[in-house]
Image (tube, rainbow, N blue to C red; front, side):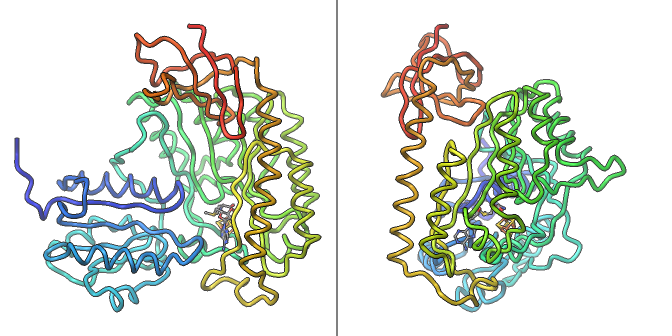
Length: 441
Ligand code: SAM
Ligand code: SF4
């Protein structure tokens, strides 16, 4: 076996959303292609990459605390801070954590090979913070963590301006990939054995093919779902303002497109939505829900909610609870509003106390839990197709996922490896967050 010198090894730690997770996969791919080897702990590594998230909480402080921890194992190592906190804090990171040598936001990852050359030359202050000429990050090689479902970026950045959100500052303006490069990657994924892909972007609905073909999102979705070998296509995230009926028509027409839409609403009050600069009203949002409810296949609908946005009254909050009852979501992610640097909401008056935000979050999660228990129980007796993703050895169960994105753990044959296969499973039990079933195979 060839011994890899420590200065050619790297460790990477990732926080945040699926986009960050996938960025790390691309960074890993780029590093491996440049002859570096990945190791499991920061202690073993020559390079320590820290891919950061700044969407909520005291993200910056957490990053500096972690960097202090890294420093203790430090001598001779190169520390790199990448991702949203890197973009947000920029060169200030060098001042507060002088042992860091690279600070780069996601829009600069295309320049990673050049930045590595500079680091290898011993440069102690390398930055990648410009959005100038930013393009989508296409790498010849991506090292994917999940062997069953592959993330596939179609658009990066965000041109919306939600008043609470740092993403437009940390990920820059929207850049769509060409349809040819998306289809090429989907084809290669299928050839390498992937059957399920998840299209990624902060706002996939505003995808616009920059090449002459000029496909919109609904067309791209359908074409990815038509790549031979691909059996399931998911996508996240959708923005209600740009969510159009042809997307539902595409799901209706192509069974390879999963019947699940994640459509973040953020609030059930049109007044709060206006303060959030979400660019739609509750009524317009409900019109989109109506399209989904009228679809030929039952479409699972999930969402994101923020409670305690500045000025959110009890009545606004009740409107959100009422929206949950009206839509009957299959699941949701709920967050307490978190003030973020550079955002317009920071300047708004009437901030809600932490205690009140916690109260609203608890009530909301309880209301949704009851909805999920009821909805999931309705599936008892139904036969759902699952994609088998793993095995709970201790429980003697296989782990499956339905097209609607529900976890369905089931008993079935034990003498064959089912992982990666698709099979019908009868649902026998349901809880708020998952289903249990048995396969007849
Ligand atoms: N682009 C997507 C969208 O428009 O919904 C996802 C953006 S963000 C990565 C995911 C979720 O984080 C948002 O939908 C929102 O609910 C939440 N979020 C963003 N900024 C927040 C903040 N300042 N405080 C609390 N939650 C926030
Ligand atoms: Fe943030 Fe709004 Fe863009 Fe989503 S659409 S990333 S919430 S600014």
